[in-house]
Image 1 (tube, rainbow, N blue to C red):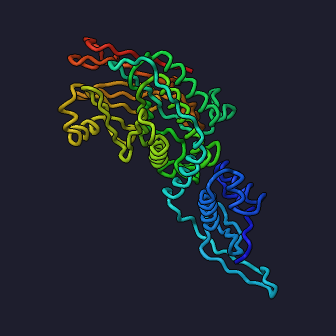
Image 2: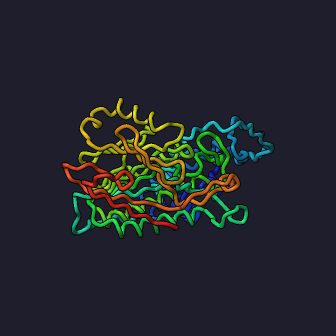
Image 3: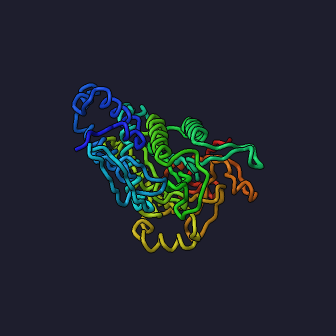
Length: 401
């Protein structure tokens, strides 16, 4: 077997931890010595390097087989032919390429693994708040954040830029401002109503395949989103005894949203104060006392259809809850209406407009809202927008840009 040149694997590194391992192997000459220097198990390094080799091989680079001709972007190696000289060196090499067949599932699995490695050292809050009020629930509404989008004010009619750095700072500061105002509710729900990510593939397209402008490659976007959620959860754990995370699947990020929840579920599996709601369906439900909350992005479906779907499929929750709410996103501004015996509310977004929406004349107030209902067993949960007889106190606070 030919000598493995680990330097060829640098192009396929997705995390700082993988780069650190490669540096140690090249510097010290073996996996075993690198593991000793890094104070980790050698099997951990073996697994990481194997993952890099598989990723490299799919792109036409296999150091242990004398294959080092990387494929073009969006293609993978179908077949490699090599002609050797008498001394064993390579004379000619042909790499037959074909459009990449790896599924989005495989790609996002690799990104999830990278994000887990990147967050392994994050410190979890150990001490819960001293006093909490079980009569209160705080719901933080993240509306269509489009993390990873790139918008330049110089090419738009408005003056708002948007990139990953701005998206991170804007959301973090909004959570700070809202969490300082919601009081000591026992449970805090971080509700992402969909389209948290701007793109859903490495080809910089939405789930449907529409090209979009992005700030960086999808792997880095996913990793930085994990860091951001870790920061937000950390902030909420300092205020609430119990934190619930809901990631609704949007029309921009149907797959990315699902993988984000799966990864967060793995990261917080040993933290009993954090609950990650499964999002395998575009419909997600959550009950609190005698109230039913249904979450959906709001794309390609009418409120009346949602109502009928909920009544048919959540019949027990519907019967046992006096109050029913549906929280949605998609339209980037706030609206509220009542259909039948269910209240529907679309939430606004902190996000700047992208090029297409700016050119088309779309725009709305940029804000993030937290709703803080107070529970009374005899009362009807009535947010201010439908308030006729406010038997149940409900407070709404908003962070505006």
